[in-house]
Image (cartoon, rainbow, N blue to C red; front, side, top):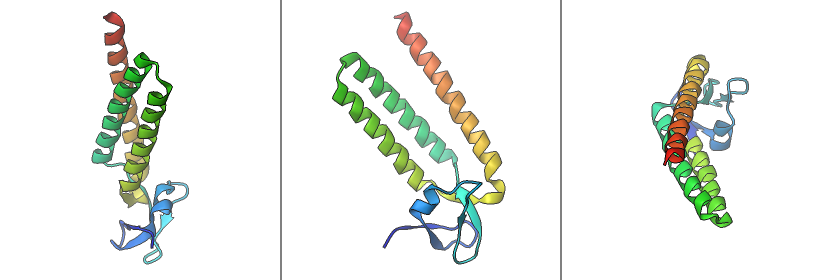
Length: 128
C-alpha cells in the first residue's frame, strides 16, 4: 500500500504521496474524507533544506568542474535531483486559503538567497 500524507483540514492520512507532490493552487489535492483542498506547503524547514541542498551541490559542482570528470558531474546532478525529490515528498500539505502568499514569499526568499550566495561565491573565487 502506498504511503499517505496527512490532510491539513481533518488530520487523517488520506492523500497519496504522488497526488501531494503534484498539488498546486490551480490543481489542489482533495481529501476523500472531508473534501478539503490543499497544496504542497513550503515551510521554513523545507526552505532551509532546499538552501542546504543548493549549497552542498553548488560546492560539489564547482569541485567537479575543476576536476573535469564527467561522471562526478553526473553524480552531483543525480544527488541534487534525488535530494530535491526527497525534500518535496517530505514537505507537508497546507490549506489552500493561505498557500499563494506563503508560496510567493518562499520563492522570493530562496531566489534572493541563491542569487546572493552565488554572487558572493563566484566573486570570491574569481578574485583569488
